[in-house]
Image (cartoon, rainbow, N blue to C red; front, side):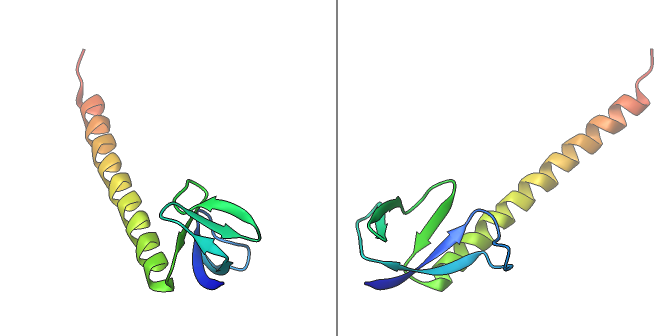
Length: 88
């Protein structure tokens, strides 16, 4: 067995995003934990062989989400200004 790191889509109640897991075996797309196969990449969780990889992936995902939200806010502010200045 080897220790991998599971990056969860949502933070655990203990305040952590990343938890160590014991992987029995793995392929390019699957890790086995407690006899069950889990996709390495999914909407629920992502598995990495090192903590640093898990952390970097999580940081990148959240930074991308923030950038998307900033872009949406800019578009919405533009639309708001247009509708405020519209004349009949």
